Figure (cartoon, rainbow, N blue to C red):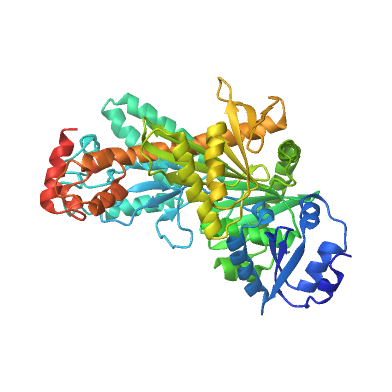
Length: 586
């Protein structure tokens, strides 16, 4: 057995353990109720899949003893956040769902939100909804039925919504009692289907009497959509007060398929699927996955129904929710249905997952072999973008074992204001790898630049100055802007790429992702640049106030909508009046 001496010294207490590879990089962090048993299990039995691969890479391990399993779990989460180990990444899920919020303003708006702070309690936040389309369609419908405020800001005069009866003109009519409208909307969002259907029928009748048959047709379509959705949600008879997520899983061949049913106000409003490898055991995998899922972008409900193999007391404490298991009744029927869905999803997708993993792994290994690298774990690729020498930006994408690691993507707004790819490359290389060196960040095994000898030389000159030895290659494109050949940064030899090979697919994917990411950032910078150029023409605006205006409004069109009163929160009234006059003419 490997590490016999080290394992004999491990205590029979709860705690966390860290697995390191030969480069002294943490590749996995786990927790254990009994450290002695868990660490022995890695080295005294036969493993398969990802666990086998992870164990083969372990060079040494460390452990930290804690006073309780809960303390170990919290420590595990913090260590994963700190080290970002590659085998823990496999258990993550960045999926977020849209929510509908009735804002807490004097005159509230109804908006769809995807980016939420799950740790902050929001009383008027409803969801999750199965997709953006469903959430937006409901918001648009309620906005048609009720005259809510529609504008982001408070304009100086009434807009089209006022004239068509879908707004009460809050900008000119003060002290409007919005409570009756607000209460009805909250009632609908809390699951009062009848109120919503009655409201649509009422609106249809009014428009029919006014001979607005086109509007009637649109509302009839909405009525059909709403009835279809509501009927599909009433699968099992549940209490109307039930707000819970129901979790179940199916396990086979070292992979676990997890399903989460979202039940809101007694209705099944959506579900979530995830298939992932099990690195140690099902219990730990599920517990970490659930905490990761709810601690970032998704709100944990009042009640969470989970398999009874999990530590419900621990999850209740960490998630601040009532975590339970169920044995009978309507909830049990949904729990069983979740299992059936998990199994179906596994059977449907597992072959594709195996195929993609094999292709990705083979592509990574083939590229390492072509370049003569002993290992190829992390790739960092760069792309630049500018518009006639202005708005110069660069972006870096990171691939770990052939898979995008979006958490590690980086953007660079360049100081060099000319169309010079070599100068841009030198600047971004210095900024990126000086930070890597200065903060002792994990270094990539390979750097990919978009171009040939000039870009490679620019990159290598900075790496040499920083005394960093990292393999660099360039990728040349054909007339269709797809990878055609590799330029070896050591020999400057040209390596043709077979367009039917896995290496081609990997390099094409990296190139597409780098290009997409830098173009998205470039558009963002250009948009802010157009605001900046407008603000340069206004007297009395310094850099600090310009930045505040850009941060708040983000575009010229949104700034046009702002009233002088709103602008006065940032700039003096005289300057606000001058800015509004200027904006009228552009």
